Image 1: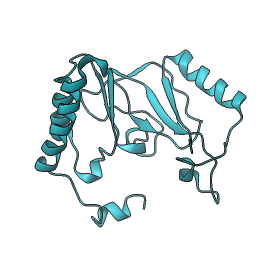
Image 2: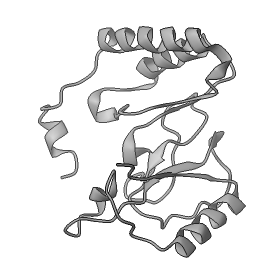
Image 3: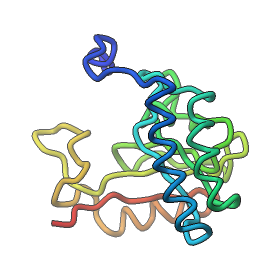
Length: 171
């Protein structure tokens, strides 16, 4: 399955010490740059690696020390977007400002601006697929959709109040 390698624990799991060490790095940057940093996207906060509200609160508190008004999102990958196979966005961390989901294509249309108080948001790769593998669009050259299609897709989501971020290859 999708998480087979993770279930076999080849990637390891986070623990409180790991999170506290990285939180000290986040805090150093947050304090150094203060309110120049308006938002944080913290990637790799996967539940299957052991992240939960308690551990994510450590990161959250660290970044808020520099700018209490900074927005925060903690990405758990597509798991924060797909909930048991249902295309319904979910708020992963109790205090995050944005739904932090990723999607592999420009297909999901939000119906409203918020999910459980978090701004609806998706990050989607613009790159073309390789060998038919939908997940290989990340950081890949080429395009899989026309500019007209993507413009219409973004407009439909913006009209609902949602935000779309597009991952593009720069090389």
